[in-house]
Image (tube, rainbow, N blue to C red; front, side, top):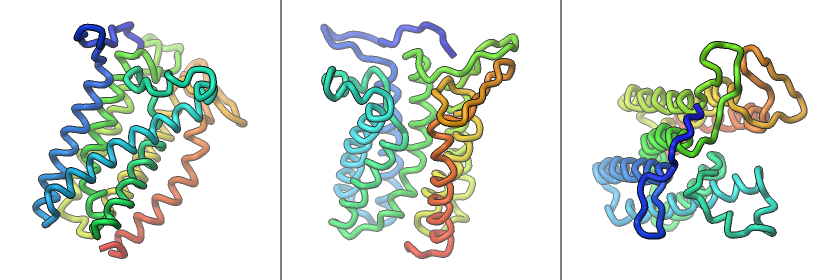
Length: 252
């Protein structure tokens, strides 16, 4: 959806607070509250939980921004380095955030002798909420647009379709929570189904560049294949491998 909304929620002197940043902060807060509360029930020290969340958030944002710049505007590193730091304007890559957060979590849990996969499971609701709210923030920024169609509604509401994927996965998480006793299954199955739904639905209707095989239907407003769609198959294989191992209790 492109509604030409004001991306700035309010200003404090020279500082502008954007809706995108507000939605991201709210999702981080809600995710942290859930992870800490559930982690304490499982006997994890509260300070360790807060430290883990802080590290994952910091390196997740760093990884997300670096991946976005590398895949979209690598010239910023040389010609406009200050632009690299303007995360409040949008421009975060999901896979980069995931990689940065997982690496930070892996390092910290090894250092503190904690179960990485147990904490990763507890991070899933925060990831779902983040995907829901940040895509809404994209509407205010006028980005992550859907392709134009020949139908009466015009452009696909790609941001809301992505938010719906996050909502479905959040409902799924709590639905199977009591029936997934092995650590890591919730996390890896979330990644598997998220990548599947994003590749099949969201990326097909997003106005993203196409690579190698290029097909666009002007009537339906769908296109193939984006960079994310090319990466979908190997990622699905990887995520399914870990999901299957977790189902058998390899990481308990």
